[in-house]
Image (cartoon, rainbow, N blue to C red; front, side, top):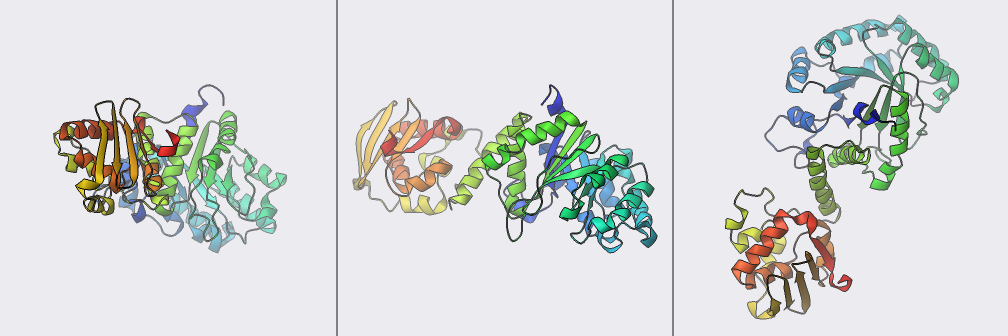
Length: 397
């Protein structure tokens, strides 16, 4: 990627208002778009494919988002699927009406382009409708065209897109190749996911995303702007993968980096079947809390309750200082190397919770037996600086 190319890469998600993003990106009571636009600079409006937006909704999109934020919008399936882009069937008339609804986005310079997602039934034999549609469309908007049938993946079709300054939508999906095709001065990438039923229920691995970095950089060098959208919206996967891509491209700001750390931990817990800790939002005066209260930031409700089932007589302190703590809890060993910021333990449950940097019942019970001043000092440091602490199996010490 050439110097400065990173400033023209915008990464976001397809859609933003999903109920299962509460707890991932959103709190229950807040403006979703306002929060979303504080994290990302781009969103694809997917709902316009199914129904026309109300004028007041479009005005809200403009007013609630900051300067520099970009919307793209899918044109109605009435145009792409029912009328098959054919001007003789009224496709241009419908498009003109749709564009009129989006005028607030256009006048505020917040509309990047319109997405023409063709149905799988639209094949090379229908390509004349695509050309006529692009030829007769109003010039005030730009288009990105997504093909769903392999017969359209050929050079003469790409030439049509070039002729009318429309972008080829580069895709990551199970059925079509992820070829990097550039047909105008902007690029459009959609990561649909690689799931089976449906594609979108898919969480990209970091290695799968790394494969895309050179491709994104390639199109950034060839175009003025790159729009990249993650469509795998199930469970907030799109939010996580979009932030990971931003980080991999080296364009993340501090807020995005901090949010990504939280989501990394959230998905580690989720995939390991670990519940979140009882409390997550830290108070200003953390170390004014008791040991029991501090443990609520490091344990889920289930393990926290079970911690009290361990008899105090089953906790044997071998060594306890501000540098190191060694103990035996029931039949298991615990070492807390404060100087090197390492906690080691050997119970079976520890191997599950350590990926999320949470405590099992044995480690939690140990802190209740330690002198309160020492326990609070160590716990506060762990909670405040969790990223610097390592939670490991005892065999790795």
